Length: 434
Image 1 (tube, helix red, strand yellow):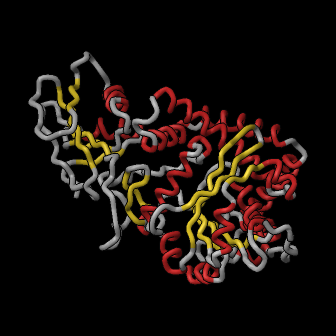
Image 2 (image 1 turned 180 degrees about the vertical axis):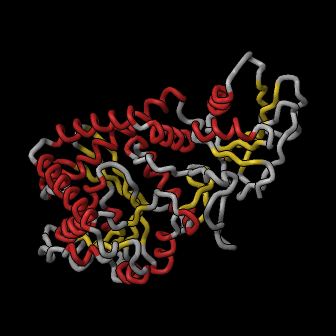
Image 3 (image 1 turned 90 degrees about the horizontal axis):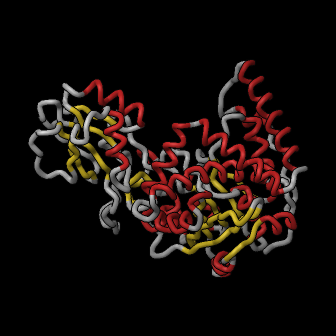
């Protein structure tokens, strides 16, 4: 570990940062100023508090968020059900959902405090394991692609990363510019003063590749959904759009791929653990590495984003590109759940063409109607007495370890079912939708 502290770079000019967002109005400038003053005030308050007090305050903040934001609560619960389907009972998953909010609050406030710690303070706050993996990669003369996630006290990694590098080797990270350019400039200055180079997501991948070829280390957040540009591979067993950036850069530069997990040990203390990639640097294997990192402490992951998102207008389709021909793939082990909703006469809607074809179709029919062929599971409406559409769909959703993803209806049942699906956060598709 290098004990050398790099000389502080010049402060980033906020005017330069404003160019990304275009000429702002006076209202927008005022908003940015007020936000930055509030942020600086909070940051200064946290620096005079103990690590335990900051973490405890963050957990309280997370509890309030859990109680106040029902939509986000459903998102976290759904993510955990998909990731840990069949591994944890429903009661435990409910408790984990609440804990995710508490730790997210603690990790958020603690990260603001961690940005101002010196090396001794970092050592008291973070316990590092398997650092020799990074040292071995540097001794081999290789660049290092570091797979990271929105997990734990993420600022601890940003502060430790430059201190791990050998003399002459630089560490860097890819980030998304903040919407507030004043705070964005402050973030860049704080990170680069420590010695961490910052690449914007909009920067050329060629510059990132050159950094790796020069023997540097590059951290890339890899746990979020990648949209249409991502590669469709299983993540925790379910197909989803995953970023190909770590695997592409590693293959083109020969960089060694490592991952870092962050796990809460106690109030204000974390374990940072380095993991090695298993197999070749493909997107599939990178996602496998990410899974191992997350399993170190699923409660420390920021699950508030819809990782396996349901596209509301086309829930039978998943955005992303299939792996290129010749790339080794594995079939998904967790299929999407879709419910075919028969009308009052028992007429079943036509199944839409799912892309990819990773869907288990179940059926909901009125009591006494003829059962349709070739469905994964059959649900009888009215078999247990009067039941609202909402109560029925909740029962179907809870009837398996994986959550229900979307409902397919014919024209006669369209309006009622669609409204309930929207309320419950389920996808809905009408018969005949391409």
